Length: 538
Image: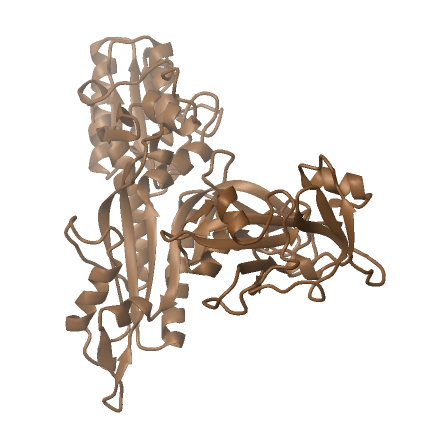
């Protein structure tokens, strides 16, 4: 490809409103252009990288036995039900199993369109894969192979990813301050979990022998910190009440948690069935018999089971890791001291619904947990029979009896993957592509004019292409500074410069993008040198 014919141009400076490194580099190097907030078009240079990313993923998936298929864009956004429906016709007996398929889809997000380049694009190319098996053991084996294929893909992209426990199964995370999720990690044992499911080792708060419950006037105590200070106890010796309205019907939910912990609403929603949570109103709180700011389950008619009568109270497990708590008396201006669970109150559901915080102890090894932001590169759903049973998909086992199919899946956003590479692989001058992803293997440029120089460059250009290398050939009448800056910005692995000086010195100048050294090599040895320098992994 001749630079002058390339559709797209480089920019000396990024737009002022491009804040993420990945967006700045993508725009400056001419990989993509912003069409609207959250909407980006890939220019030829960027689309070459996209295709290389897809080729890597495709090769690794097919290595694990996945087959490519296609589904219409009007199908279910995730494609899960469609694949389950197809299995009703294509999988009849155990002889047809296991199966693994994948397809490419254009996914469109809902909601507002944030800026942020390919990391936060509203519309992106997404690869989705599905496995079908007749039993959990086989499904797990295929699922593990799928995870291995994704891990190899990310390794070949030069990305250090963290497989993390997640609600649906597993997420491959790239730690990054601009990430949309947070996770907990123990560096001692490697425990890694999305914050929506992360847990920590319980920490008991010494409280001494159980005290008698007593009423305490607590005027002007608007917060847990105020109450703790007034009562002379740490916040870990208080109980906090948090109120929600769950689902479309606004079912009232009373949450009680130790005062030094925070509610993880994702955990709570999942416990209740996955519906939306909203803050309860003061009227809804008082209707349950509690007083806003001074509430606790003490004295309330608590529901004994999920669908029974009374107040639905969800207790975090931390309420059992201590005692002699200070808790609301459901009376304005008053709290109780000496409150103990389960002596003084009951709960409908007791579960881990707390947000894990930095510095807490790892649930596996008691190491220290840290909390960080991350970008999700892949989402993997552990195999189950829920979707296939919902659509009536089954197979006949060796005895001729119908059995439910196990279905697992994954998704990878190519735009996010590209953004992750750009965020990770760059220097002050531009992109440092992992060699399997570079848009071209070689950036060939000329400095100066003259028939001998032009003939040498043209001859080398043709010879490199005939040898199977992809070449971006810059013979523009630009200065050396402009050409070198563009070469560093675009970031092809090898740069070859043909100039009067190099020819006079005996050949052409070869420089790897990641190295500072430059070497003069004979013109007739240039193709062989490039072949040794580049790794043909694309």
